[in-house]
Structures are given as C-alpha cells and as structure tokens.
Image 1 (tube, each protein chain N blue to C red):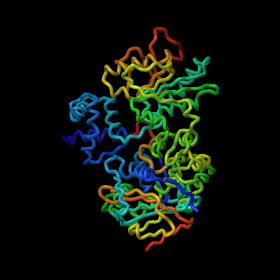
Image 2: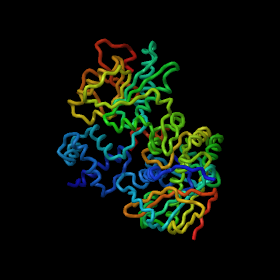
Image 3: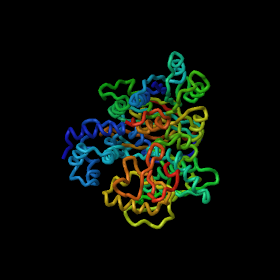
Length: 281
Length: 162
Length: 128
C-alpha cells in the first residue's frame, strides 16, 4: 500500500520544518516503511490512518515520532540543550543549597540508549558542581545491546560532532582508533543497568534528578501512568524530573506538578506543604 | 620506515559509511554496499599520500558514473550537468576526507598531501614500493566504488601513472 | 547575517554555503586564508561567521584564525574550523589559536546546524 501524494507532502513539510530534512519525491516507500512501526505503536490501523488522524488533529508528540522515524539515528549530546541549561542555571544551584550535608548528587538517565545523555549529564555535573562535591549517575535501558554500547563509551567521528562542544570533546574524550572514547576519569561515576521501566523496578537509592526523556511517548496512557508511578518512588521528595520536549505528566499523573526551569519545564513531586521558594525554580 | 599499523577493513568501511551518511546518502536510502571484490574495475581515481611517522597512500576509485553521482550530491546538480572540473574537485575532496580520517588513526606526526586526481582506472597508477594493506570494495547504485590503503615498504612514496 | 566559507574544495564550499543559506546567512567564499583576508579587507560589513578548512594552499586555516583574532576589525567574527584534522592536539591548537568551534569532516547537516546553534547563530525554532 503506497502513501498518497498528499500524505507524502504532509510528512515532507513536517520533517523539513522540524529537522531540515528534504525528502525528494520518489521516497514514498521509505516514508511508508519507516512509519509502519510508529503507526503500530500508537495503535493506528495503518500508516494512512495514522497520518490522516495526525493531520486532522495535530499532536506534537506524534509529530515528534514521525520526525524521529525519518531522521538518521544519531543521538545528540546535550539533547535539546534547554534541560541541561536548566540543570546548570536552576536545578544544581537549588540542590547544592539543600544537599550541603551530603555534598553528593544522584542522577538517573532512565532511557540511556547509547549513553550520550548519561555522559552529557556527567559533563554537566563535573563542570558545575562546586569543589568537594561528588555525583553518581545511573543509566538504564531496556536493550542489552544499548547498555553494552553505553558502557563501552566509544563514539564515532560523526557521533561526536553532534551537539558536543569541541572544548569538551578534547577535555573528556580520548582517541580510540577511529573512535572517541569517554575518559576513565569521567566514567568512574557512571554505571549502566538493564531495566524495563514498565516492570517493577529494582530497589535503588532515590535520585535527585531523573531524565526520562522521549520514552513515554511510545507508551499508551496506562503504561505511562505505571512508569511515572514507578519513577516517582525513586525520586527524592524535592528532586527534579525532566521529560522530553513533547511530553508531560499533566492529565496522566497528578502526583507531579510542572514547574518552570529556565526556558523549559521540569516536574516535581507535589506536596501539600511547599518546600520553599526554591521549588518555584 | 613505516610503523606497522592496523587499519582494518571495518575501520575503512566505517569511515566510508560516514561520508555516505554525511554527504552522499543523508536519507539512508542509497548506501554503499560492500562486495569484497578487490578486482572490480574502475574508471577514475584519486589519492592522498601520507608522510611522516607513517608513509603510504589512500586511494578512492570508482566508475565515472559513481564519481558523477558523488559530484551531483555535493554540488546539488544533476548528474548530466557535472563537468570535468567538478568531477576532479569532488574526487579530490573524497580522497582528502577519507585520507584525513585514516591519518587520525595513525601515529602522531603524519602529514597529508594535497589530493591527486587521475581520470583513468586505478590500475594505471603504480606504487612500486608500497603494498595494499586494506581495502573496501563495494557498489553504489550498481556502480563500483573502492577505498584502499597502501603502505610504503621502505619509506619512499612513489606514484607512477602509466 | 553574513557568513564566509573558506575551503580549497569547491564541493565543500557548496555544501557549507547550502547549510548556512538555510539558516538565512548571506554567504561569500574564498579558496584559502589569504584570499579570505583579501576579501575581508574589501568588505564594509564584516561577516559574523567564518567556516574555515585547515589544509589550504597559500595560508592555512590555523594561520587565518590567528590573523583574524589579532585584528581589531575582524576579531568579533565567530570562527568555526571545518576540517579532517581530528587529532586531539590539532583541536586543542585550533581552540587555543582562537577558533570558537570545531567540526570534523565528514559532518552531517544536522550536526553542523547543532554546532552553529551552540554558538547562538541559529534562531530558535529554526532547527528547521
């Protein structure tokens, strides 16, 4: 079944706008092939139905799925930048104030994929925590292959070009053949685990910051609730949760409230008694 | 004397794939498919020489059609519009990019020459004091494309075109 | 905004010009560092951005960066190296000489746009 011209046109415009990708005519089969899994994931009968729904009722999250499906599989460092800026400008100063006794932060990269997010978080911690502070990062993913890749911490030339400032490349990476590998000093505080977010999670000490980005969009509402509930149990009461750009807890889990964090939003456990001015980010 | 270096087929394949992903096939629909056919013919080739702590050459070779396809991708032109100068420039840049990436895997203290482009099969250029130590052979849209690496046996770099 | 693309390969200049044009830069080009300096001397408005190859005849990219950073008229330009030179020491040298960013060839369009975004040269919402 081939994509209609108007559907192809719609997708072309979308990916051009969102990712600077130009789909030449004749690539209908490609779009079709790449969107079949997406249509399946959202429960549509097929690609045509998925696209016609999307055009009738625009939905940022589903648009994101379309764009992701058609871009080449390169994950960026410091993806979307704003959450990392929020960490630097808002979250870390807040946590440094409240964790003065322990002087240690725990961060979870809850869909760590090939590891760029976890190592980006490590670089951020390394550069913005005051002297004398330490951090521990846990990265988890449902795929054994991804966990292995993340542990190997080796990235190709093309991969390290993506969003990683050159100054940080030379500071935190060393050459390994044709690849670049994260230096041991930075890897010391990071571990990767195999984990399925939709299953009961293994007990872990709670985290100060959790990045759960671009994974909820692949789940139905019931699963989203389940995951957010599981994650809440592992977030410190005054901890910070970051979701993907097109994701939210609103309408799904009332235990979180959305707060401004720099130019983006973060989610914190809603409590009856306000923790203090710092909560308002 | 050249230090013995291990740049394997897999490394070359990865470098070449990255050139395709970046410039020649950004949508991932028309990759270079390895064939392993070291005897496949070519019609044009380009090379860079490496000197310093390692001496040798990196050679790109392909059919004219493949070279024109590459030029068309780089220059955003139609294959039919590609002239000799455009072809020469793109062939040189391909050798430069792959050669540069190979150099990054070599011991420090290596230098890359300016690329040399020859509108003839790669068999027309002989490297009498070098041997081929690695090569990637494949087809791109049915057209032969290869990248090979030659190491000088005794520190001399010679490329004699027939 | 204006950008200058400096590389001895016409093919590479075409690729870079295409990318910066997408970001609404007006692009000029030069085939080596000396040609670029000569061209800059004639311009009343200095480009905000220069994308610079390393290995070029007459004057290489590193030398160009050094010259620009010590020229009060050109010092404000954002300088991005775009090169196959990818040894750690080379990158450190370029950054020390005053380059603001470094892109290793080959690069995807998305990667180049992200690097420019890091430098604040991409209007927000225009990773498009």
